[in-house]
Length: 141
Image (tube, rainbow, N blue to C red; front, side, top):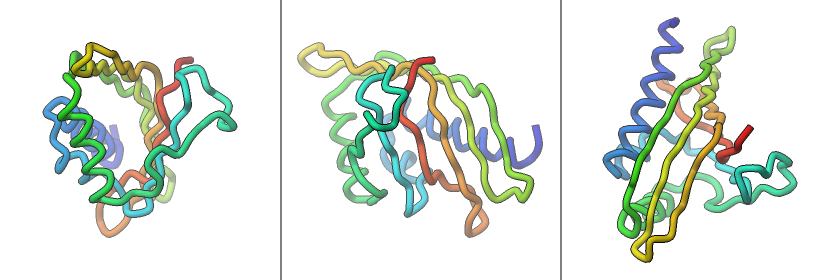
């Protein structure tokens, strides 16, 4: 891997640690202020016409509160993630990582929320560091 690809791998690994430890503060370090995260209604909703904007543009307070609520009301059963591909632009100012995930949450009533499939995490190099600018929701291929 190139140095830039290793930097992207570190960010993906940091995000995995944040989910594993349910550390909102660590999770928040990933996001660019202009981050947007569209979410498909189901893991088979490949057509973006079916996608939703659940939380809007990144807002540290709002997103932190939302993730903390998830962590307070759900138990993490497992969080398996495998990087399939990392691509860095020729200019080394943009990148994306393709990651297969299998993350299972269970709430207090034993309802399951299963994030299983493939995602694309998009990054920009800005201010001397990489920040996530966009992330697709989980899709099964």
